[in-house]
Amino acid sequence: MKKDKRKKGYLTIENVAFLLKDIKRAYPLLFAFIVVQCIFSVIGPVLGIYFPKAAVELAGQKAGLREIIVRLGGLGACMAFAMALSNMASQGKYIMLNDMRTYYYKKLFVTSLHCDYAQIESVEGQRKFTRAATAADSGDASGVMVMCEALISTFVNVAGFLICSAIISRLSVIAIMLLTTLSLVNYFAVRYAQGYEYRQEDELAGIRNKLSYVEWTAKDVAIGKDIRLYGMKGWFLRLRDDILNTYAALRTKVENRYFMVGGVNAATLLIRDGIAYAYLIGSVVQGAITVGDFVLYFGAVTGFSDFVGKIIKSVNDLHEANLHMNDIRTFLDIESENEPKNPERVPQGESIEIDFEHVTFSYDKQAEPVLKDFSLHIGREEKIALVGVNGAGKTTVVKLLCGFYRPDEGRILINGTDVREYQRQDLLTLFSAVFQDIFIPPFTVAENVSMRLEEETDMDRVICCLQEAGLYEQICEYPDGIHSPMTKAVEDGIVLSGGQQQKLLMARALYKEAPVLILDEPTAALDAVAESETYENFHLCAKHKSAVYISHRLASTRFCDKIVFLKDGRIAEQGTHEELLALGKEYAKMYEIQSQYYQEQKGGDLHG
Image (spheres, helix red, strand yellow):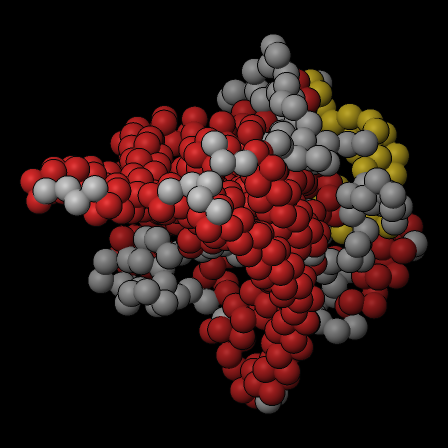
């Protein structure tokens, strides 16, 4: 079982180990480049501290040209070699670090596809994904890039700090303590600003979600007519400006903290270096150290200040990167509900019987349940309709049946077995569903029917399903037939009408050959007559399957064996169409109201 880090997050050392482990596994050469850069990035600056001392001493000794060339040339060659290897490793790792960003973004994407639907559908789940995606895919500012660079910088500068400390300690231990104390002031000042920025991330992620939604909606070709017809351009621009202004105001508060940190850093730098240089100059004047030693100590103090400043920056960068890595791992750590240890086998080649037994369910555990003590029996090959006003719980029944959510109370049985005893992927094989949001990706007709790549698709079966759905002849009118791409956005493909889309979805459901067919108001955008005809076509195709139809238009589902009228999460009435009309209760009243607005295309009494 994974360690629960949702509240406090992982420690920096844990995330560093996690990142290095993934780097070593995914890109071993990147790991080697990191090691090379760490080692040779230390050697160059340290040699740079001793180079001026050697030059001054050689000049004071009036050394010969050969000795100067050998000593200074040797030091210079070593410095150049170290810098060359460091730069080579730095440049070489950059491209692979970008690949690591892609590596994590892919892991996030795969997690979003396979985690429990309840996790990704919730507002909290969407916020987690936005934060994780931003942390992984923000270019050089992404958590992966910053952590890796900060890790290298921390190692290099800590090593340099220790070497400079060893040099300065020969002069004064108190000087080291003073320099370090003043440097710590800078460190905690930066940590304060970073902590404040991180605490705003939830609000910033929410604002980014709103901005993304507005911008993508404005660019959606499907609503382009509405934008022009109703003069919505100005409204969209004002809405976008309001969101951007809110974002800018929050970012300004964050940047103000960093501005104050800059002032603190400037003051401590002036005090720290001023005291150190004054002490060195006084030591030379008093003859306590030689000119060569002065140059060495001067370089060590300068290096010390530089290393300490970089340590503070790199440690704070590590802290910031750790926060972003926590965002990534928080989403990657999303745990699906435990699968059964000894799962039952789902029914194969047999009809399905479904029972909801006293099911209670709520999306928000603090809110009123959507379903309350809900019990329903669906017989083998029975066709039922779930009807009722919006919000009655119809779609929730489908989500529970498919295993997208689990009941808070009660249980759901398939052929007498609790659905919790099946593996989720096995459970999903039992259902073919057509939901309200029509999903037609920009693939070929054949791929849209099979939902597989063409090389994995049974073309004869595709043709058979299209024929049964009544769409094959229209598809044959296009030059490429079932191989035609279904988009005009990226290439010259085809776009189906609303009714044709329903037939395509019908063919898709038939291709899967699942024993249970579900239609969750996929015809909401069609008129009443077209919807009724579509449902009847689905009914004909269902044949020996169990079927669950959802509609708010009561006339569309008169053919069903049983109609279940839901109200406030409970079954208010159930029976055949004729039985419910005879009862004269809520179903009959709603039916009478709806019948005033439309008549069946074939004419006649709607009661017939």
